[in-house]
Image 1 (spheres, rainbow, N blue to C red):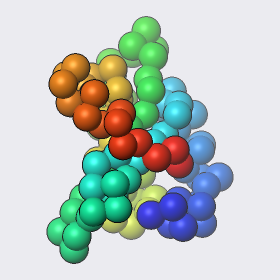
Image 2: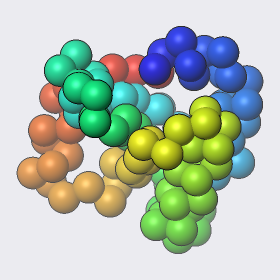
Image 3: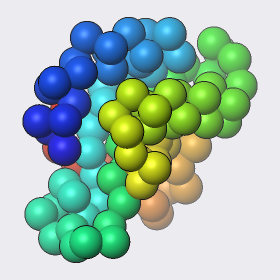
Length: 97
């Protein structure tokens, strides 16, 4: 995944900036190194809630990242929308992109 993003890093960073997202991190099975053939790719980002609707911005960012990287199995989550129990688990295994 890192190689895929590195190959399109400039465009990826431009998407993050357009949607007001910072600190992209992998989490879940890909970050832990336990992913399998059917595993999706989970990306955690920070988004300022004051910059507009987080859900809509995260959804738009996710669709554009999927198109940029040519994969439908990428999910983007703003840390601010994760429930506390999920956030604790996700943050425990994040890998900075």
